[in-house]
Structure formats: C-alpha cells, structure tokens
Image (cartoon, rainbow, N blue to C red; front, side):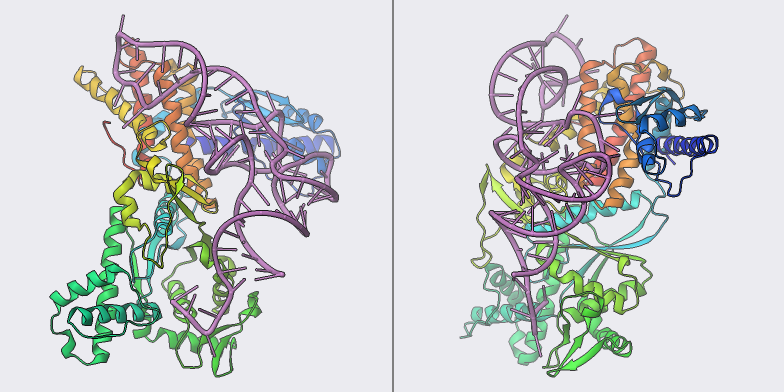
Length: 559
RNA sequence: GCGCCUGUAGCUCAGGGGAUAGAGCAUCGGACUUCUAAUCCGAGUGCCGCAGGUUCGAUUCCUGCCAGGCGCGCCA
C-alpha cells in the first residue's frame, strides 16, 4: 500500500479507537457507526486532512458537533501517524496537520516502486471484461467511436493499476443485416465496374469508400462473377467485413488502442451458440411464442416491454447474438462485465440486463457506461456532418488532423456522461489554451534539467542519499503532496469509472510543477539542496510518465 | 407521450450532504543577465436553470416544472 493510503488508514483506525474510548467514558450508545472519512481539504488553512466524523455523529449522540469533536480529540492516540497538530474548526470539522517527514518517505516510495507507483490491489484481481468501440465493420469509425476508444482504453489502464484483471474486447457485428447489406453494396459496385447494369440494394451503402473497396476486390479477385450469386454475396460480405476490421485495427492501433480479443459474431453462429442460448432460456421458462415469433419475457426483469428474439421469418434479431455473446463472456470466467456504448444505445440497457438475469447472473455484474455525444468544432464553429450524404469526419481523419496525443487528451478531459465539444482547431493550436502541451512541457522541462545535470557531470542522487529535509518551501511541499495523491486518485477513478479524473490530476501535477520550477532553482544550488531537488524532480518525471501513460499520451523529452 | 444525459463565472467545464463553490480560456496588471516565458505571480466575475421537500446543514439527495441533446422497430 502507498504511504498516503497507509497513513490515512492508520489515522482512521486511531479515530475509531478514540470513538470507542470516548463512548465508554461518556456512555454514548452508537447504533449506526458512520464510515470514518478523511478528506484533503480544498482550503489549505483547513489542514492536510480533515474529517467530519463529529458532525456525522450528531445523529447518534444528541450533542453539539464541536463538543463531540473535542471529546474525540481527548481520546485520540496519534502515535506513528505523523500528525503534528489537531484542531476543531467550523461547524465541527476536525482538522489535522501532518509533519512533512511523511512526504520525504513518499519520494523514496516513488523511487523504489518505479513504474509500479500508484498501483494498488484495490480490485483484488477481479476478472473484468471491458467491451468498447464495437463499431459495425461496414464503414469507417466515427468520432463517438474515437471517444469510446480513448475512454475505454484509459479506463482499462486505470482499473489495471487499481488491481483489476482487465481484458479489452471488441465485438464485431459481421453476421447481421448490416454486414449483409454491406456485402451486397460491394458486389453491386463490383458489377458496375465490370460494366454490368445493376440495381443498387435498397438500404445499401452508397458512400465512395465502397466503390474503392470494389476496385480493390476486382484486382484481388478478378473472377468473382464466375461463382454463383449466393457465393458472390457470401464472399463480399466476408471479404468486406474482414477488410474493414483490418482497417479498424490499424486506426485504433494508431490511436494507441489494442484489444485482447476481436470477437466475431459469425463465430457465435458457426458454433451454434444462438441455438444454445435460446434453448437455455426456453428451458428456464423465459421465452414464449406469439405471432409466429419467439419472445423474451424481459419485463419479468424490469424491462418496459418484452423483446423479440427470433422473428416470424425465423431470423434472429440483433438481441439474440448479443445475449449469446454475453453468455459466452461469463463462460470464459469473467466476473464483471462493463460495456461502453454510444448515446443512441441507452434504451438497450434494460433488455440486456434482463437477459443477464435470465441467464442466472447477478444484475450488478453487468454494467453499461453510456458516452454522450461529441460535437466537432473548428474555431468555435460547428462542423456540419451528414452521414446520409457521406460527409462526416471519421476517426482516422480526426487523428490525421489533430494527432494522437491531443485527440486522446481532449476525449479524456470530460466526464463520460457529459456532452463533449471538441474544437479541432484548438487541439492543434500550440497555445496556452491547449492543455496537452502544457502537461508535456512540464515533462520536457524536467528532462532538460536532468540532461544538463548529466552534461555538467552532476550525478543523479538516490532518495536515500539526499537530505530531503531541505525540501521546505511551499512550492516543494505542494509538489510532493500532489505526487502522494496518485494512488488514491487512481482508485477513485477506477471505482467511479471516470478517466477524466486522471486527466485532471495530470494537469494539476503539471501546474504544480511549473509553479515549483519558477520558484525554485535546481541546478547551481548548494550541493545538498541541489541533490534533494533532483530527487524531487526525478520523482515528478516518474509520476508524469505514469499518468501520461495511463492516458495514452506521449511524454516528450524535448519540445 | 415515455425513458436516458445535461443545465455551475462572458466561454469550455470540474466539483459535490458540510467551512468563503473551483480550474482553464477570455479581460486587465506585473515577472526572462540564471535549469525551455509553450511558463509563473496578481486582479474581477456567480439567484450552482426554476419551485417545493428531506436534513442540524442542500449547489449536491428526492419530487415537479422549464430548457437543450439523444433514444423509444419482428432495424442494428
């Protein structure tokens, strides 16, 4: 456990013991013990840590909160907690000030743990499957897919750091109606290019990229039309979706996102898993027949209407393979499923959750994060997009224009459930408005210091050799405190599934460093102080690298 | 009509049952003979959408309303 967390748990323990002692001597009877919460106050004058315990207890003990706080403090034993002073303040807060010595241990901690700093065992190795993006393999990915990629990948990084065993997975809808129409569209273009008169399929994909695909296909398979119509269609569907999947893989890799598994819907069909899941649900008594279709009684698990699983024409609906897929996820040993979906899929949650329960898994083992829309802007002006006319900015185009670092950071700046304004002009602007450069610049500045130290023949000290007590100014202390917060920030972000917290933390760390940089020199100071500050600067570099790594943003040595 | 998300500073957004509600940008004023000024320091700004309710305490939780966005198929 990190020092900051260990310290907090020791202090909480001390409060618990103080409460027991005070209760014994005052005759308090406490039926519902409130959780003991420690927070880092927003206001510096409120100490390093504070607790509202006394105020929480007013409900149990009918006394004034400040009075309770005083009594708690009287019984408080703070040996080995670094707590230097305690006060009762405001309506009944207990504020604690810590001795800086614990901060020096943080620096040693960071050095010892290296890349592992910030990691914890909070998740206890729980097997989690995170499915995200899962765009249909029938066209280029859009900006919401890009947002999902950034959020999903970073959330996986965060949860891994918090001690979960996370797998990243992409579900490929390569067997449904969309895939079929896509195949027909390619085939129609192929025939056109061969000079044949064809009617373009209704609800097909008229966009230009389909023509480009048809051109490639003509070169690769010039004798396609010699096959039967059925074979031609099947071939185009398979070839086209495979081609798109390869494209998506490449685009996502350029975005720094790699999946553990690209799960093919067609494998579910081939393995007869649709039949199996239907049989299972039938035997469990959750399916019924009506109007020639097979229905799932999802209302029994809180959905607002029952859902068709097999249409009257014998074809499964979209839901059926999806249920089979989730069944498959559990069968592979995952204990918790998280899906990241676009804003147009929220209506789908209730039926999927119902299916999970019908399959016999707990409702809370399945979780959906709904991302809100992305509005693209240029210089504050909305970028008009029309999918029908084939005019929209794809994920690849966005990346080509603004670059991986800016794109990832911008997508990660906002809470998932917040609509996102993404100004593409701002993202490439090298100005004060652009937070990506601000953070990277902090890292580059550190590298510059370390580079020059090396050039001057200054040996980089280990934390144990340096006299860290020399780090005393406000700028130095603030910086170490910020470094000390990483482990709890990661746990908080993992628990709440909110990657933007880490983006924010990273920005704040850079800001704290920039302030330190202007207030404190490193090189050229008296040797002992120079050493201590070099230790601090190296630790900051380490933590910036770790957090940028979680965000998937590069940490340049020079800018 | 029903469901989900959002409503906080001029703009973009954090925060969140508690202390004087924050940050960036924009605006204004300062700081480079010294490790990168893509930086720092300072200044002002708020019926936290509206109305009720729960609470010792609500911007935060609950209900209703208003506004914006997105959904509501034997489509995927």
